[in-house]
Amino acid sequence: MSDSYSPASDIAIAIATTGVVVEEHVAFTFTALCRASGADALQLQALVEEGLLHPTGRGPEDWKLSGPSLARARQALRLAKELELGLSGAAVVMDLLAEIQILRSRLQ
Amino acid sequence: MEFKDYYATLGVERTATQDEIKRAYRKMARKYHPDVSKEKNAENRFKEVAEAHEVLIDPERRAAYDEIARRQASGQPFQPPPGWDSGFEFSGRGGRRGGMAGEGGDGGGGGQGAADFSDFFESLFGRSNGRDGREGRGTAGPRRHAAGRGPVQGGDHHAKVTIDLLDSYRGAARTMSLRVPVVDAQGHTTLKERQLEVNIPRGVRPGQHLRLLGQGAAGHGGAPAGDLYLEIEFAPHPVFRLDGRDLHFDLPLSPWEASLGATVQVPTPEGAVQLTVSAGSTQGRKLRLKGRGLPGSQPGDLYAVLVIAVPTSTSEPEKAAWMALAAAYPHYNPRNMLDALDPLKA
Image (cartoon, rainbow over all chains, first blue to last red):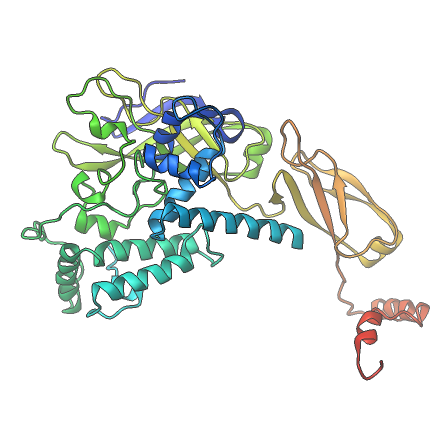
């Protein structure tokens, strides 16, 4: 991986860097998922309480969250913010979207 | 630069109250929000709606915008005069979309990476931290605590990138152009173009994310940089349609190929192969080429979906051939099922 990126220059080019597929090869600690998703600790805890995220471990300090948690957390925050819903409302929307997807795939 | 009529975007009168603007926004946000909408072009429509709301819901921005709109209406071409916004004090309340830039959104509350506001918006309201809401919410973005607090890791950035199906199929090195917000010494935010060569892993699917370690925002005080997350989208492919790891494509057959069976050449992402179609094949039937979908530990399958193509007949010999076919099937009725449903015949 290259380190040649410098915000000071107009165009910075980094030499090839390899992407890791988050959904398949990444697990997050609670803090890392906060940073990656842009959520604060209370929001992320609320998403766990809503059952949208399923950490393993005894408590936030010890939690491990799967790769797909990142996209779920970001989607929930996006819906909550842009549709002016609470996180509970966003959780309902996501459950319904998942159900619609299942029904659509059965129709095919 | 194109003048944007934010009132028209939200479908409200220029005299609309803040409540009316909020209602109009909510209605359109539900209709066009890309997470829930099946409307065509929903993402772009939502960006326009969100931008219009961002301006009109804020009394200070709205007053400033109305002033520009008055000049526009009086026939002056749109151009924000230098210092036009002096006298308007922007409060810098939180923007709706945390990351307005092509790349960005550390602490941005799930802001869509690619959600730029228009040049028109930026020419009026700029990108400085006080106005675009990047400092507006949350506690997760480490950068906002950076000043004078010792080493702090840089924030994580997000962006969407579009790749070709074949990039995922074969794995590929691709150079991506990203725009990244950079804050200068005066606190102004500008966009810098940044190119990054990324090795695309084989088998990556749309909606998945790639993590590039250390390619996010720079750290402070010697702390490491944040990470960059790229959300993968596929450009539409002219032949193959993706469903999970499986690929589908339409395979046209002539009526005689479908009826008598045939061996035909078909495309796969790895190159053409010969496929045997059995006699008596029907429209819509799927033929599976196992393991020729997207690669991975459990590779997907490739499905040829049969489509019966009927040639036009113009010459006499062609018409005679179809008539001979009709004569050979005196009792064939493709509408048997419909006839059975006809109440007059029941």
